[in-house]
Length: 147
Length: 147
Length: 77
Length: 77
Image (cartoon, rainbow over all chains, first blue to last red; front, side, top):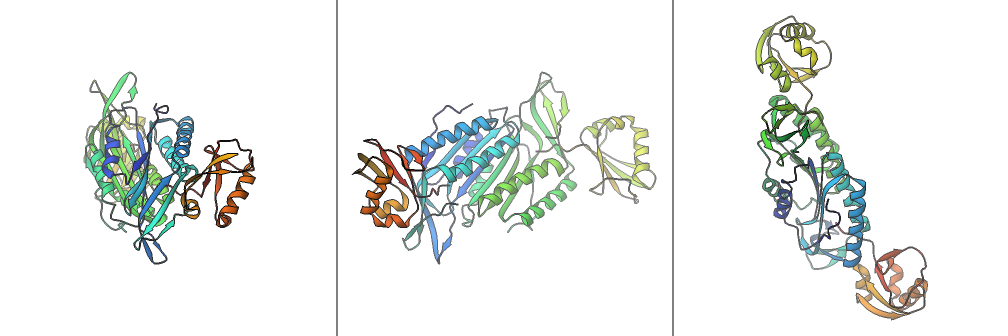
């Protein structure tokens, strides 16, 4: 179990697909894992009033966000029979097409990892003090609406 | 949309974590994707009557499995608003700790990719003519029970 | 009827072969009697039939040249 | 009361600063009156308060040295 480790969630800029692959590879020696669930958030090139989003700039109230992420980790480990849980979120600028959120849960049977992953994603979006600023081609911006 | 492409699902041996990372990387140019969901099945080193599973050997009724996988793809694309869907399943021997199933769905908003990924995994386990043979240290084996 | 039989998983272990031809009556009930005569252990295992890759749930007419597969419970993933 | 104010997201755009000290009464209702006096546009935007990193949902007593954060709706992920 990893629930007592202090985890570093925040990553500067985009999360690389290679990093995701390496995170998966680190679990091949955990022979009791039968199921991994992964959620990735990717920055969309949305068109808002004819202006294309070219990137999102993420900021956070770090101390509060980290405290809440710790609470989420603890409660998810209590609720589901998980072997591993990893959460990464970008800070700073992530270009459209880049990955800004990586949630990764592993369990013996699939139901735990799938349900835990979904619940973590919902809770991060609703409860964690992070804000996204959508940056447009013409250098104007708009604060992202909660999804 | 990719629903009319003929997809090659079956992979010889384990699916490498690098392959998963590369599959993710191929989607950075799809600027309308906001969410990716991934499920990975990993071979567990289960202990069955004091005998450790060292690997699973997968076999399939290929023609029937491919037909059903095609039907699953079509019906999932109809039911959910997906941008991409990829399914890979191992054939042959996969050592404990290796990945034997890779389901990957992408959508604009998270609900579609998450729900579609979960449903594809359930349907593969229940409907596709694949069998796993659990191989033990002492070279005996047992046919895997449906999960 | 000349039918091609395919066996998978533990059924193939039990029959000792995974593909062979058989001559039987014109429906699956008759085919199963023939198979169970040859492989009495089939009574002990769980399986379903597919004719030409389509699962069947009740006695079904066979045509010359059909392929019938004996499918134990799927366990992929 | 001497309070540290933190502002995030569009609130920081509106106040023009993200961290400053303020002197106000001993509860959040009073603090908000003071802030709204200085930044009338706060009336137009949606936000909640956190005292020392804990969200509060109703008028709450303040202690000297508290940190109060003005938090617009979260939009991470």
